[in-house]
Length: 198
Image (cartoon, rainbow, N blue to C red):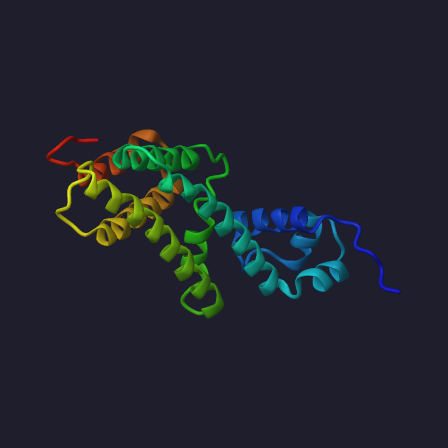
């Protein structure tokens, strides 16, 4: 009769995600994972497969959580103000990280996407979903006259994804509001509508 698991899978996965996020894939050993997850090697392999499969599961957990925050972009209200609040919240999450880990997605893109196609595919899907949420909001704002329509919503969405990743990267080395706020402010100026600026 197989032995019952005596640990919470999601809690263990959360711990693994934090370890990968802090150290990266290559620098995180199986022993590091066993210790931080509080399980033995057999349980790790039985439940998650190998280190790479565990990493992919941790990446999924992170992106799922991040995309859930993106639901705020589909709420009713002034689109320019919703986007402004979303971007500043993003900036303050970056500033509020004492470990200066940056974005797990961005870190993974830099470390693994050039040679790990499974990671690269997950990252492309994630960025596509973020862009879709942003484009939905921006297009709605353009139709309401809250955001200018000088550029297509999809192009602006792609631009804002780039700004957000820039905030995360710069925030790792200059975690100061004075360094990050201008990036958000300048980006938001691209939304100014002739009808009413955000």
